[in-house]
Image 1 (cartoon, rainbow, N blue to C red):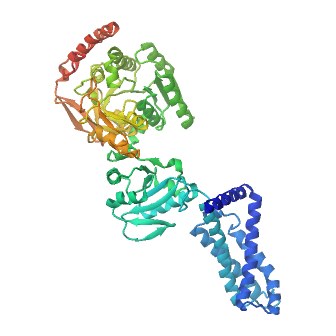
Image 2 (spheres, helix red, strand yellow):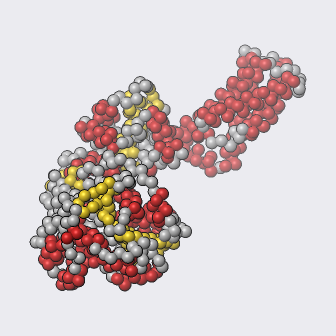
Length: 634
C-alpha cells in the first residue's frame, strides 16, 4: 500500500513535469551541470584519498569552467538535453558514453596541449571523471525510467484489483509485452511460460519465467490463478490454442484467453490495452491462411463502376470494404435497410474520402428502384448481388417473402443488369441450395436456375456458393455469445449438427476472386475445409469466455427447427466440381440432370406469391428444385 502511494505521487510529479516543457529542459541542463561538477570533485577526492591539497584545489577551480563549457558543447552535439529518459535504452547508453568520451578527449587536449590551466590536472582524474560522469548520466536516466515504469499499473508491481495475466510465449515476445505493460498498464503479469528450455529459473524484468512443457500449463495456471492467459507467437496457432484451452479446463481454471493482433504493434510501440483482443472462435478454426494473388481482381475492378446489393448486411458490407480498396471509379451501395445503408456509407466516407459513393435506398424486388439506381450510376460495370433472405427458420414462416426476394428479386436485378450491358453479374449463393430442406435453400437454388437459364447478351453471370460465415447476421456465433453473456443456457438444435465455416473476410476475398475468373453461367464453389460440430463450437465459445461448459453455462439440445438438417453439402450426385488454377476455388459441372428441367415459370411464381399461397409455393419448389427432395408440406 505504501509503495502504491509513492508510485502515485511519482506519477503525478512526472505528469506535471511533462506539461512544463521549459522547466523540464532547465532541470535537465541543471542535472547535467551538477553531475559534471560533483563527479569532477569526486574524481579529485578519489585521486588524493579524500583530502585535496591546496595547490590542486586551485587546479580544480580553474579547470572546472573549462570542463563545463566542453561538456555543454558535447552534450548538445549528441542531443542529450532532448532525449526522453523514460524510454532510456541501450542505444541511448551508447550515445551517452560517446558524448562523455568526446568531452573528456576535448578537455584533455585543452588542458595538456594548450595548457590553459595554472597547473596540470592529474591524468588519473581525467580517467576517474570519465567513469564517474558516465555513471551519473546513466543512473539518472535509469532512475527516471524505473520510477516511470512503476508509476503505472503493470510490471511486477502488484496493484490491487488489476487483472492477473499469465504470458505464454518465448522470452523475446514476452520481453516486448512486459516492457509495453510497464509503460501502458495492461495489468499484473504473474509469470511467463514456454517450452524453451535454454533458460531455466530466470527472471525477466523481475517476473518469473517457467520453462516447462506446454502440457504443464494447466497445473501452472491452477497454481498462479490468472484472470487471463495472453498467448503469444509461436503458440497462437489454432491447434495449440485448443490444446492450451483443454489443459486449463482440465485443471478447473477459469480464465479468459487473449492474444495480440501482431508483434509489429509491439515493435512499433502501437500496442495498447485495448488492442489486446480476446481469442475468438475464428482463431480456432484451423483453416490455412489463404494467399491469393489479388492482381487480377484489382485489374478487373480498378476504375470500374461497381454496384453491391445488400450493401449494409454482413456479407454485403465486407464486399463494399474490399471492393473500395481496389480503387473503383464509383461504388453504388444498394440497400433496403436505412440504418445499414447509413452505417456503411459513413464508414466508407471516413476511410475513402475521395471515393465516389452512391448510397441508394431501394428494393431489388422493385424494378423501378433498380432502374433508377442504374440510371443514377451511369454505366454500371459489375454487380455483386448479396441481397437475400438467409435465416432458415424465419423464412419457414415467411414463405412468400422469401420467394419474392430470393427468386424474383434476383430475376429482376439480373434482367435489368443484362439490359443495361453490365459486364459481370455475380450472385452470392449458399451451400443450403444443395439438396435443400428449407424454403431459404430452395429459393437460392431456384435463383441459380433463373441465372443459368437467362439469355445473357454481353453480360457474364456467375454464382458463387459457400457455407456459413462466422459472425454474419445469420450465424449462430452472435447468438451463442449473447446467450453466454446472459448467463445461459446455450441452445443447440442437435448434438450431431455439423456446419462448414469460414470468416467473412475470407469468404468475400474468395467471392471476388471467383467472380472475376468464373465464366458465363458457371457456379463457383468455395472450398470450406472440414465441418465443425455446432455443440463443439458452443463449448469453445464458453471456454473462451473463461467459463466451464455444463457447469457455469448449460448447453441445451432443443431439436431441429423447421427447414434445418444436421449437415450441409456443397454438391450433389449429379454435380461434379473441378479444381481451378486458383487456391480454394472450384467450378461446378453438370452431368445433365439439371439441364433436363424446363425454363422456370416466373409468371406462375408471381401469381402464387401475390396470392400468398404458401402450400402452392412449397409445391412449386418441390417440383422445380433439381434434386426434387424439397418437401411440399410445411
